Length: 67
Image (cartoon, rainbow, N blue to C red):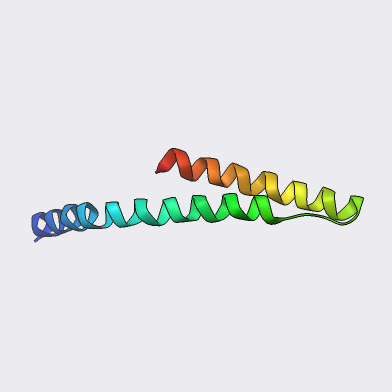
């Protein structure tokens, strides 16, 4: 039974891999769009948005490397 489960896991991974990659590409694109859209109106907002954008950019880069 363990062997059958291993085979099933490999089969599911083969089927889900392309879907995960497709979703990852969409996440990267959405993250990049968020970074471009955000603008602050005063220094405090700009600083906050820059911090958020930097964190999103790091996560987007991680996703790009994984995809």
